[in-house]
Length: 314
Ligand code: HEM
Image (cartoon, rainbow, N blue to C red; front, top):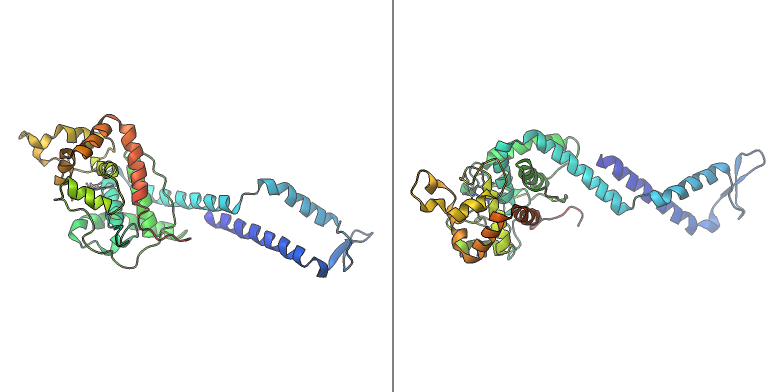
């Protein structure tokens, strides 16, 4: 566990501090010399210390030094083990049918980010914003993650922001999408983010591009992130499978046909993307190259959950 590793860091820092302190005060120190009987007695002369216990300790330390992890490596190991604890608790409460709601929750928390006034972002504020109309239905997802949070908090504190970021990535992976590495250390906000920062359903392509640009996203990233709508019940293939069906179906424009339920497919914003030349080029690329979509989605999601974040150690 992270705790044990943290203890190691403290011990190794304590040891280095002691070594330094020792050499700084060398002239004052009381030395221990080996008497003929093998017992140790204090001495203030400047002779060397060759007691077997001392030599054994120093030799062990010298042999171990090349294999000792640096504080940075220990920090990484600690973060990796903290991540495992979060992932394992999330996996217990997550199922394929809950994955779409969890991924949407991640977008609605992080997607409030505004580059211009540096507000919003992935900060767990969604827990204060559940009564907003755009967040309808998301309290279910928060409740699901609350169970995981209680379990994790019993071992180590986890912020909502870290938990939701990891849970969104787990949702994608569980449904067959890419594995997305998530950094830890986000701090939670204590109040809701400003209103009206999420994209509205009625935006056209140019409105969507502007909205995403204010969050630091390119058109390519807007299109890749919109591919999240492959999950859920908007008609883009299997609702529990994360694949590139979203792009294939967008190119077919089924809403243009009057047959059956085809006009129920997609949101106005999904339909708007395919009418825009620049967006349409990316849609065509992702429709034939799922690996490219997975890779671009992976980077765009990792960027999304880092937006506007206050990090614990900075
Ligand atoms: C481009 C602008 C976007 C708009 C206007 C938008 C809007 C919406 C709306 C209105 C729904 C339907 C909610 C419902 O069924 O009640 C939805 C579903 C969903 N959205 Fe978005 N969204 C956008 C982008 C994103 C992004 C970037 C992500 C994630 C990275 C995302 C993830 C999802 C998911 C997974 C669902 C399905 C939820 C479910 O079925 O439970 N959306 N979105």
